Image (cartoon, rainbow, N blue to C red; front, top):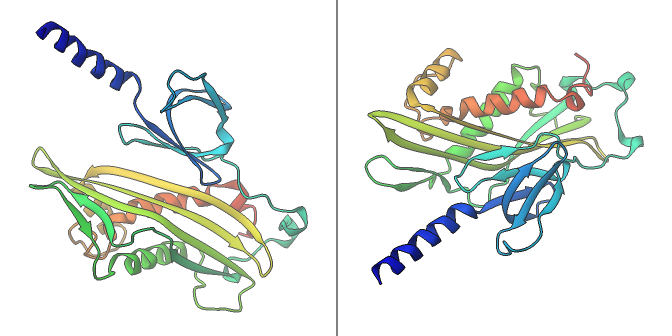
Length: 262
């Protein structure tokens, strides 16, 4: 009897490892609970998580924004399909935009702005932003960092163009790893450039950073910010690295940079 019981336990453990749950996030916002089998050059092969005896399915990589795997790791697909833009709304090279013509707005698009992470030091607990300190600080960081890249217009409501940064997700996890505090930050945004009548550019970006907290504090100091603890309630500078990474990805996107006169 004991042998049968142990065999059943081993079987269920095996099945759990064989069929972990991954989540596929499509570019149109749809999600698929899946077991990802293979990521090829142009397609992703998977099985539906609740139908493991079903045939292997395929989805174009260009239709997928991100996969969050069963172990929590994320894979973002940069070349996912962007919003279709009609040719008469595209900005031709001869009509390139000056950066000072663009008004920048950072908007909070999170489903639950009060929950901004968790801490597993000593005891596990959620990190809450009950006094709404995080988003204003994040907004300030985005505006300051973009200003260093030439995008300094944040007040002129009569600007011909608007660059909206929609903050979709923001979290931090602090944990104690062999005495040194380890911090992991994640940020995802939609960036939309519009003129008075249409959308010119739209793309999603995300960044994930995991390192000892000391590295973040040193990075903050090197970039001219006051050296405080990494925790978000001291100015949100703990998110500086992921914010810089998102801005760098934006400025390396040929579709975006080709719109501007440099």
